[in-house]
Image 1 (cartoon, rainbow, N blue to C red):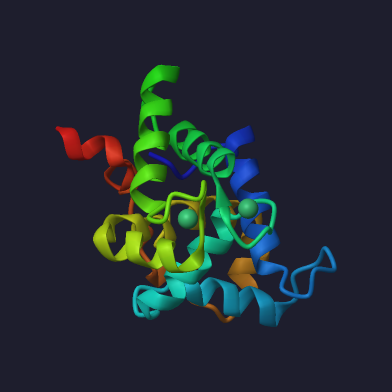
Image 2 (cartoon, helix red, strand yellow; image 1 turned 45 degrees about the vertical axis):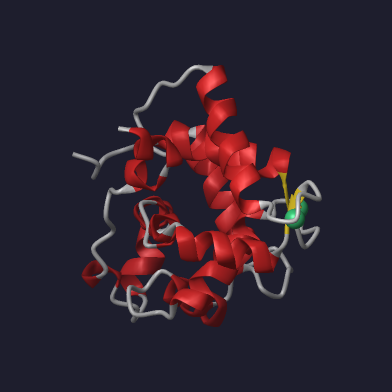
Length: 172
Ligand SMILES: [Ca+2]
Ligand SMILES: [Ca+2]
């Protein structure tokens, strides 16, 4: 059903974020090496530690080395907009606050990489974000490139498990 899905503005937000993550040399371009290396993050056999570190960089929208509350909120909103869930602002705020407080172990108002690792260890579903509905969008955004590359994206079954990755589901 998703094969013809157009890229929404929120998908664009995610794509830009992911692009930024791929663009290791920070020159606004993704060369083939960067592309392959970045895609390997989403491979099911990639070690969890790498995925955790990668997810941390993805959430650290402003590259401060910490995940701040508003960054988490932006990411949660973007993720929710990707899904078909319509949640009220209060509920979203609740999800963000709960997640943030759980992850911010030392309570200094930001999540550092160590705290993130610990949070990810306790919440393995977090990493499903990295195994990835967005890969679909990326392959839609750059279809010819993906088709012509040697990277066998077609074998990497992106799973639409996004909804399971959100903390709200724990309550049901
Ligand atoms: Ca940050
Ligand atoms: Ca902290």
